[in-house]
Amino acid sequence: VKMLSLIDLLFALVFAMGNLFFFIPIFMPIVGFLGAVYYKKNYILSYFIFILGLTLTRAILYIYIFINLTTKEQNDRTQTLPLLMISTIIELWISKIIYKFYVVIKKLSLLQITHLKISSNITNPRLILW
Image (cartoon, rainbow, N blue to C red):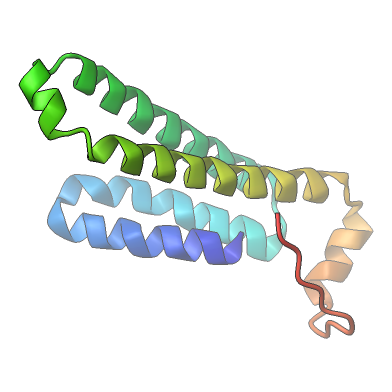
């Protein structure tokens, strides 16, 4: 979740350079990163809701705009529909990862979370693919 939120922050900064309005969403990747670093379940849940809401809003708006175009304009923009579908699937996959992380953190006791915070030596690293 740390890496996903940092990548999200990088893209948010790039978009913010083009338009000052996009400085508003920069706050949420920071919340996601802090939630992952300090194991704060409320921060992680907030970041999950933000990502899921942003994904669904973007998809619904694009479909709404696409439906209201003329047939010629729709034919000109048909190549963007597969890109939207792919990006939506990827964003939903990222949302699933964030949610799974939230569920795991929610089940941990305070002692386990404290142990995770102070433990910096991983003796048995594993690669987990979702």
